[in-house]
Image 1 (cartoon, rainbow, N blue to C red):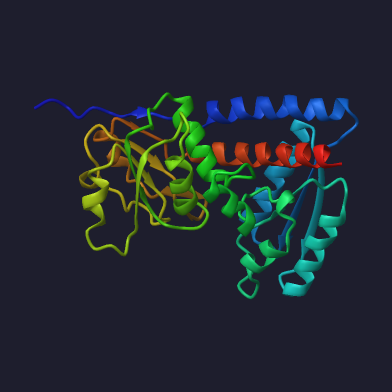
Image 2 (image 1 turned 60 degrees about the vertical axis):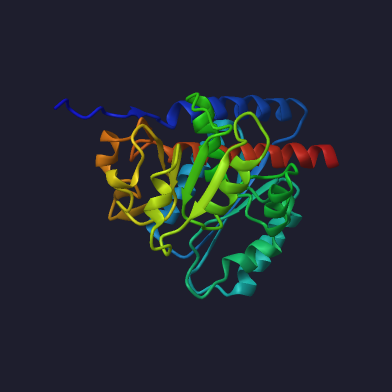
Length: 291
């Protein structure tokens, strides 16, 4: 019997580099016209991982030429406190894009905070108005991880149009918006999309039929080799952390069955960050056109 074939890896770093190179040029063009694009961030509480993510975003913002604004609220901050900071950044002319770091402490409502935000500043693409724009096929900020997955597939020349994409997971940040994105009529989309979730008893019947399978549940190792059609493209979109170790929804052994697969580390993550900054520069460009 021949040894299993190892899947082709689909790293996210080259995709992110290309996106960020474009962002850097657009930031330089804005600055040449006297406009310094600004990214505002809000952190509530003292979660180490969240604080680390903010530092990475601030460092990347500086490297790309963005101005940074930041507010760190204590874990005891009220919903009203959070809304007041969001509104203050909404009135700050230099803060073109705004990020509320998630997750928030348990007593705070992230959706309510998003609703207070100016949708034109929504760098995550999660404001209800922007999700409506996505559903209608209208321009606006697109959720970062779905946009990154579309860009990753396009960069690695994975055909999507006319193929069967199965998304395991229906979350508001990934599964649902990705289904909307990949079903739209566009050369890098135009797929037949099925959304299934872990509460469907026979979910693996659907995943075994996928030409492209996107795991977006946040349950480590839920997708195993027997859940994947041989030769399929597999994207690990859902992750959890065990300490500092990143755990993917996709078991490592799936690489022996898949035709192409994102790596556990350095797959979708870099593209998500890159798309956040693409959204940020587009926020600044829209504000410039509106002024």
